[in-house]
Length: 186
Image (cartoon, rainbow, N blue to C red; front, side):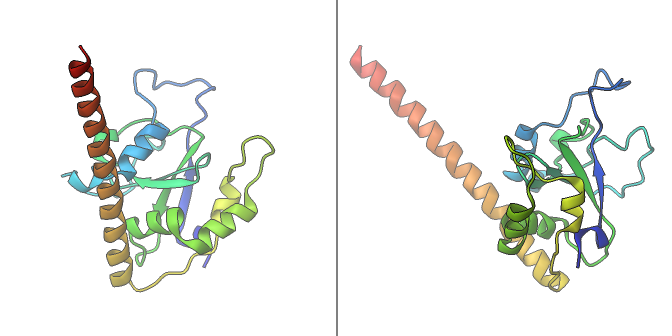
């Protein structure tokens, strides 16, 4: 089934136009990366129900799936990034189908061979190739049972967290050893 049959794609706000939310920060690619790296797994907040007012429509909510049109990556918003402004480079994917898991949606958009193939064929642009909202909506997605989705989604998010922790550990070890070598040199 097409993605538009199971989710509503809400494109972020164009920040070059007048903006009454001056004092709020914007959701960035770094925020998306941090959310995908597992901050959400430690969040104590519940998944939002999507009943935000029109003024708050462009604000990130804990548990919502956010998709980057530039990187073609999706993540679940963590409590650390709640109420940041979603700009036009992102879209909120509001699940309208009761048989679709948030974490599985992230997995499918980020890792599914079928979805990646569809995205690669459909990307537009000569300098920066990216998806458009219309292309995103038209992507075909298979839905396994909810139990399988939850198993796959949870395993995927745990994998992303493990990868982020391993990278952080490697960075800390590198800094430690370089500092030791600097002291030995003196």
